[in-house]
Image 1 (cartoon, rainbow, N blue to C red):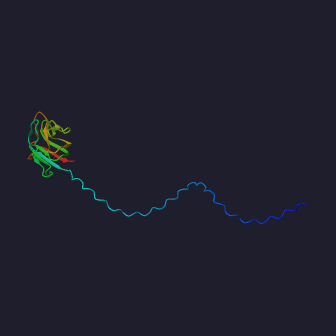
Image 2: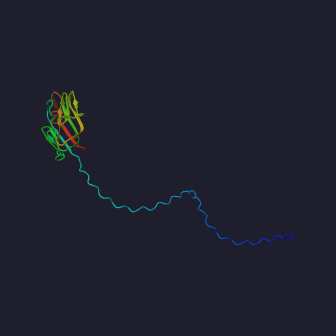
Image 3: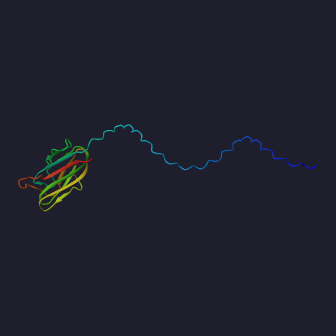
Amino acid sequence: GPAGPQGATGSTGATGAQGPAGPQGPAGSTGATGAQGPTGPQGATGAAGATGATGPAAVTAVGSFWGSGTSVAAGAAAPLTTAGSGNTAGAFTITANTVTVVQAGTYLLTYSAAIGSGNAVLQLVVNSNLVPGTLGGTSSSGTRMLSGSAAVTLTANSTVLVRNVLATAVTLSGVLGTQTPTSVSLSILRVG
């Protein structure tokens, strides 16, 4: 005879066992940077470093020299006969209007002269050589001052003097009232 009607659906069977894990997916994009954390406490002070080597001794030396007179012959050295009491000991000697600088170094040399009358042109001389830029001159009458200065690198035992570079004598300032002024002065300062 004909097939009978389909029977009712049976109840759901039990869940099957979990299958194996699939392969790992690709890495996700990097997340945003987090906020900066608070500053940590300051660390302890480190130990003091070793003491450095002692530096070189000071290079300063000072000297002042002067003299008085009535004139300086053509081509002659101006009078420098006296050394200052405050000069650096052992740094200079003075003989025959010439200062000897004992130690090598760079020095600032400055001179001045009181001129009585007539023309006058003086210049610093180091080791028999005229020092450029130190030519001091004056003309006309009446007491006047002239001067010159230069920074010069000197070798040990260099000689320094102030010379009349004219072909005629230079008249220095004489007695003024009851005083005899310093005619010529020279200052020497070691700067290096």
